[in-house]
Every structure is written in C-alpha cells, then in structure tokens.
Image (cartoon, rainbow, N blue to C red; front, side):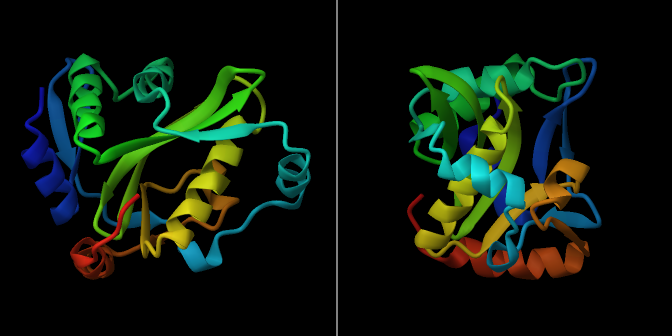
Length: 188
C-alpha cells in the first residue's frame, strides 16, 4: 500500500500514481495537464434533459470500495490491488471520495477522486447505465462550486471530458493554480 501522507504530498506537488502492467507503481505529472474550469463547466443539452428526469439518485461516499473496483473493471486499467487499498485508506481518512449515481437502489455509475484544500483530483469514472457517470460528474461540479473549490484536475483530456469543457494547460500554469488551491481550507 502507498503511504497515505506520501500519496497526499504527491497530489500537493502535482503528481499522482498509476499501476503499470507489471503491477509496479509509477508517478505521473503530465505536461500539458487537463482540468475542467469550474466556471466554464458545460452540461450538454441532451444530458440536461436526462438530469431533469431525476432518473438517478446521487450519493456521496456511500460505497467507495465498490466504485473504485467498478472503475478498475476494464480491459486497460491503472487501478490494481495496491491502488485500491491505498485509496480506500484515503477514503477512511476523509481525503478520497466517491460520487455515485444510483437507480432503483442499485449503483449504476460514479466516479472517485481526492480532495486536498480547494482542489479535487478526479481519478476515474464508470457506468453500468447510460449517462450515469456523466450525471455523477455534474453532481461533483455542483458540489465543488457550492464548497468554493477552485481546481478540478482531470489529468488528461479525453473526448468524453472535452464535451464538459476540459482543457489542457501547461504544467507551469497548472502548478501555479495547484499551489493556490491546496492552500485553501475547504471541506468536500
């Protein structure tokens, strides 16, 4: 297991761990780095309609372990047993969180990440039902805005995240935003 303080210090410095194919852990600090500017978060029109139907119930930290394990269940994954145990420990310490989409008392999608100061580091998402992870992301952004977070780190831009307004910024710019964000006193 990765030591919790080492893991949190990594986030404060702009690095995060991923498991490699041989199960070793490597640390990354991409340049450019992807963020979703909270003020410019875009909810696609079709997703707005889905959200208005109230198909999903959002829960926070209800079943973190199930969320991270669901995120790991994919062909190419950077989430191994050591990553799972390390982030479950961060969850127990109140630093890692899950945002979950439920339908008919079943977990159907969600995401997890780490909160440090006024920064949230999104790690992974999953869905079992169409739009469930997207609704969880919308709920995350609403929560971050309400609690005056200033940074939502997504590590890399994907086509999935681009539709929500994800952008790439230089590592230098990212580190300036990060230093300001982690100094803030915020509660997830």
